[in-house]
Image (cartoon, rainbow, N blue to C red; front, side, top):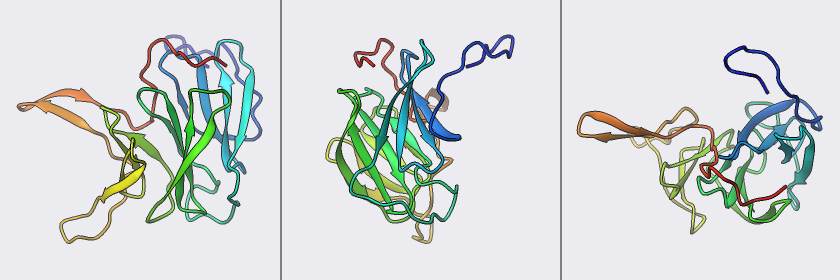
Length: 190
């Protein structure tokens, strides 16, 4: 962790199981959910103590070759209400969904996607999940409701997508592309 004013390291978190890849942080900035190389799953770190708390491996699925990013899980996000962790699984072309109301989180569902995901984020209101495959998933139903396509109808990817809501012609609210938690005081304990 670094101080954004001084750019100095103020705390280290871990050690984690391998090189850190994408990660997300809860809204109270007490927990980080981390992808690491060679892990189909994620690890959880305590940002206050600096300790690695949990390693969660996806059960019932195997690792295999990936098209991009070079690791089994290269994308993780918290729903804005922080009740669920969504994890990408490139080889199996899925997102795995975990109940984040318990620690460690427990897997509750998987959704088959049209391509290998390398990222996941959510709409500002938390109704939709956007894996980088261009699929649009209803978060409550855990079902694909549509897919993004270009003007010719060809499927498009959405890894760099960012939602911006306008009030007339003025940007009023922007989402984030990182699946960050939005609960200021977390009810989830390590």
